[in-house]
Length: 512
Image (spheres, rainbow, N blue to C red):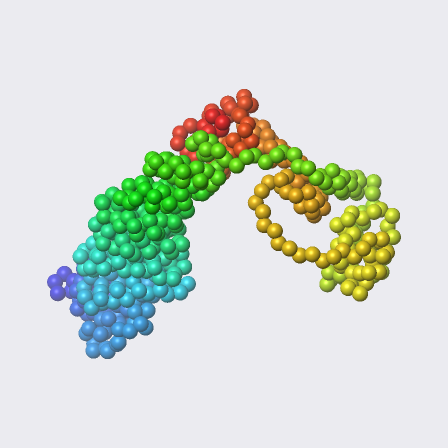
């Protein structure tokens, strides 16, 4: 057995006093690339002095396999055996797999292993001790050395992405697939799985699959019809992936109508760069009508850039009962100020529950109702409803109002507060007396002006979220038909440079 036996012979006269020293001896021994016969003989020599400790340091799966090969142990290679192999955190596993073809056949069962929170491949690799104990690097090494079928490993990784796994576990498979650096030809062979991976809803998976399909498209081997059927996730994903999806569609050999239908999805993307790319692609296809139909999906600044008309700006003044709501708000604010200044005694609201079940006792209600200070309407009605059902008629008579009828309805809306119906404004004002936004018809412009004044004086240009803030300001300016005229603000915006999202938004603000 040559030089490897030197370690075996020398070990007979040595004594190790710590596990660390024994680990170092094992590391040196395995660095000599011994055969499995030599490993078995070496471990037998160490066991004579240290019991089972050397075998435990080598690993359960490794030692079990050696006993199968050289000691007649019979073990079925079933799911339990695979679990032992998967979960054994041993640094010399790769040595065994390189020299045992039958053990390498179990790799396909390893790649089909899902596991749970503690024993998935992702969890085991994350908690593994030392770089040699990672399954991903072991499998990548075996593929690089030609000991595992590379196409089969690539396809097994993609199959893992299609199983119903948590994102953290699925990312292990996408990470290994990326580490193997598949060629466009290899990816084209498995594009059926890559296309299905787009529908998994896992960001890392969609990102990886989109990049691979882009390479397949550049190689001229992408199935255009299939990609158009699966393109929604990348077009609505992260900015970089959505832009890649738009570029893929632009280069596809497909009817213009079919491509336009897909590109229209990207018009509603939250990032202006994606909207611009999709709009330019639609204009390049000559389908101006699709772009016009989708104009309402674009941000006001992007729509203006392409000369598209967005919905008319709503009136900044609202007819109705703003005045009465304003009076209620002013009264409430005055009460709060007077209480803070000590000019008015603090008191519980009429509707404040007096017991732990949310009810108001009759005696407490009657005492509060005797307070000469009039209660706001909302407080009055809520107080009546918090009386016991059999006491509500008496409570309403005491305060001189009818029992309010119970009403329940749902209404969904997506519009500025100052465009709501007067009764909605009343409700908002009564429910949130400390909020002035529903009472100021030009609330959004007041906020806009405030931001425009504060930004150049107090905000760091490199602050997180600056691009989103500038994009918001730009959209509001375009929507309201205003221009950036403040010299301080313009000077601050001119300091942005480069191709960052913040710099682009700043330039749009300057041009608005």
